[in-house]
Length: 290
Image (cartoon, rainbow, N blue to C red; front, side):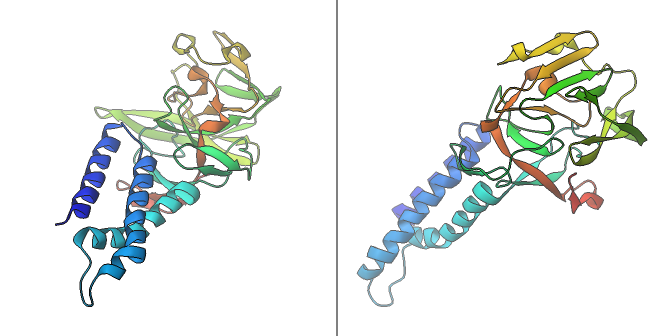
């Protein structure tokens, strides 16, 4: 095995370990892998191929790079600009999304962003109320969250007695059955499902009897907190420009903007739109996210 092969293997193995430990992100690893294999592929086309004798095979490192470069480049482009897969880790978006759902996120719905630095260079659409969005958690941007957009810039959001009011207009609710789920240790909880319309999105949400809809003691200190007013019955928040107010569909089981504040526009990853796999429930495969 030649030096190029060893360098390539070290890059991929070490980079994968750093991603696993959270030291670097997967986008950066893909960028580095694309750059290194691309350089070797280009050198082979322009230099190495001219030096090889007739019938002489490429070295192991060049062969690996030439084979991997198109694949890594395709994955990098698709993941950076088109779609990105995510796995739902918790039940904060029940009944819309379940823990274990593998979803796809549209990366260009809200604009084209430079990979790694997440800098928007082309604006396409503005996020709208009711859309399910993946974003970098404001308190720790290395962690991705998924919630539903409840408030857009300029909105006045009120949440009292487990009911939303937006810009002074209470939302219309209608009950739509129940949803039973396991909380651990074979303990089952039944929530009340209702239909709620946010903007043009008619979707399901859920509340759990006996659990408070808002716990003031759990509110953290966050930027622009002066835009919010809290009391025992709930809160009201004016969404600042360039920010969004996010809530989980599992209203009594979601850690969201009620407790840690607004999501800056720069933290947006993309719009969730499709469930492509759930190994525990194959019936969920192919489900659109409303």
